[in-house]
Length: 309
Image 1 (cartoon, rainbow, N blue to C red):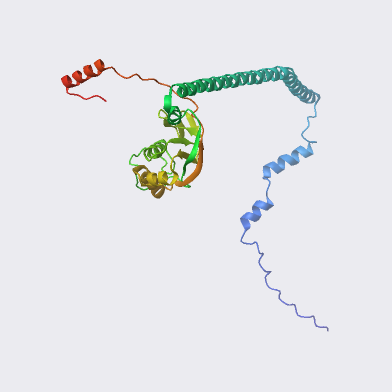
Image 2: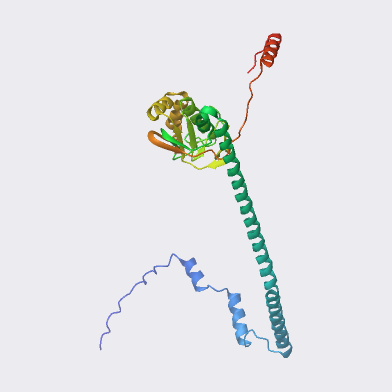
């Protein structure tokens, strides 16, 4: 009798690598809900989603025709109204261009008239200046000048809101790293006080009646905006003017702005500085007061005890 070979015990099968992810496996294996699967199978068994009766087919056809009619009508209306809209747009563009051209012509007329008035004012200064006609024209800014002087460049700080103390005691400065109109006022006044004979900022000649103001963050000189860096040119003895300005209170003020707020400055003596004439001048005349008027003023001062200026 033959003996059968012994049966070896294989043991339990090894666990699946994804045995611990039963929930994920269930989601993957049943991605489609059972109800959706049954509905899909039922539509397939009934011959698809298309209607089978004549009435249903007619209803579907009527809906498609109505949709096509609405789309066609909208396209036709858009095509009809397109030329009208284009014409209105072109009319508006033409009107804007016409008004812009008219404004440009008016601005040119204003500049031409302003130049004529300035030229007549300069001639009046030259004719009535007497022996000091050249000096009067120089001091009033009526004529362009050139000669030795200084070049002072002032620019905003590289970073803003630098903070710290310094000469700006007012809390109205929201950005202490920006050059302000009051800074330029002190710089220009310091140059005049140090002996400058003529001053210009970014090509704008200053006179005794010039105004340096602010409009937002912009600095205006005689209502014309300036863009940093601000280049200040002054006519005078270059080295002496530079030294006198840096030693003055306004020069120290500018130095404090540089040290405390990072405002960038540089000053140098120049052998030849050229300044243009002032764009507009205000010519005023004065007459000496007579002896009678002077005596009346003296009596009024004695009576009131107040002086005159």
